[in-house]
Image (cartoon, rainbow, N blue to C red; front, side, top):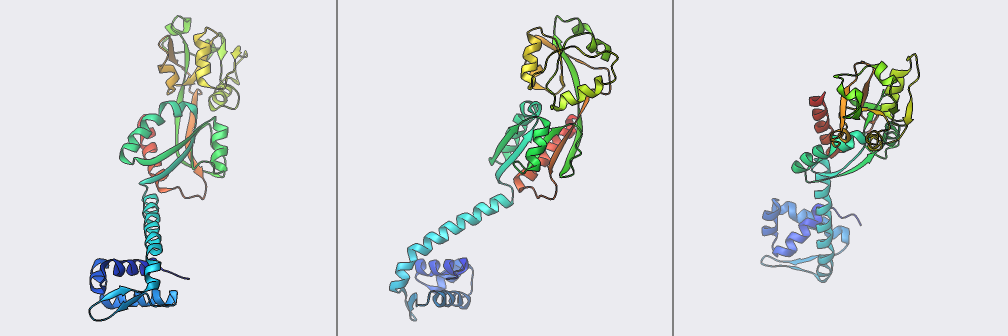
Length: 298
């Protein structure tokens, strides 16, 4: 049985108004056009649905049986169409994003709150992971966009925005380096370092910057997460190197961040998506907002 939504809508309107004239006006149709729709529906069903004469229109027994079912079908389909329109115009949907923990803790909360003030029906799924995992999640389409660190050379990814994040040295306020306005490579080599683990975007930058050092650095410990690195520094185990945007730094009143006077201590950052994939409208709108915010912080 091939029932069109327009024919069902015409049937329900005639049944509810008891008049072809009033139903045609309600549906913004001419009466002949409405009559054609009802006849087409009756041909599809295989029986008459209305008894009509010059003064009266009434449902046949089959029409009375079908009315509740077709009313429910019409209600459900109209809700489906409304949901589809909301998804297509970006007023609802889910933004699936993977990002570095430093951005998840610093940039995203305020950005999401401002975005949802405009579009409250948009939800977010956030995966805060290291750079290699961000890229893998986007590549495997477990998320739609990723905010990643390091050089982005994966041919399966499109770069929507590229920027950079300067790294800083973080130490206790009583540490000798805290008295310096800026810190050089030689200063870092003379103190124990708390470095995030290999495989993180920050560690990749630090390792590249230290690669040509005449003496190897002294590693106190190698945690995975910045919050742990900060805790190790707070405990007096050494100095860590983190992005200047990291919220973990600002949350620690007993620690101080100093710029590193070396152009190699810069982490590239990129917003990426899977190449050849169209972003959902809500995600596309969030990408515009995210790029605008990152551009103002550059």
